Amino acid sequence: QVQLVESGGGLVQPGGSLRLSCRTSRLTFSIYDMSWYRQAPGKEREFIALITYTGGSTNYADSVKGRFAISRDNAKNTVSLQMNSLKPEDTAVYYCYAKSRVLGYEYWGQGTQVTVSS
Image (cartoon, rainbow, N blue to C red; front, side, top):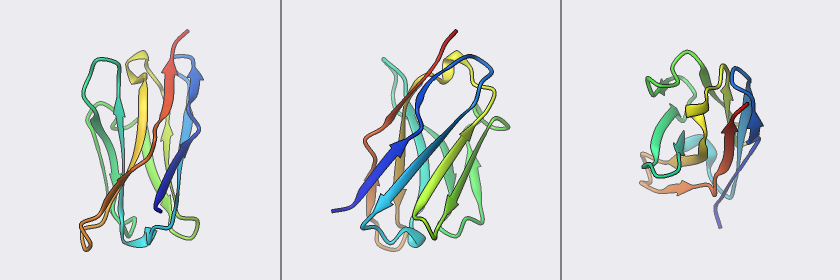
């Protein structure tokens, strides 16, 4: 059974940083584009960042561009999200998402809570 397990969430003050990680198992990680999404209370889930399966290209939502950075380690089957200059509006549950263009399969993690508050 494929698993995506996020970690690294928590409570941080405005202006602070957090690094989220998503460890995958039973997944041919190197053929999956990896993304992060988030969902704030009362809002729809929104796209945050994507990194292609080769790691050669990234894309970000305008709301996080210049503050967040996505990266992947294909040897460790892990994708990370470095979040800097955090704002209260970044408070949400953050989800890891994997999708293979070749196979058409997609998977979600269970989410990790990020709370930005003083």
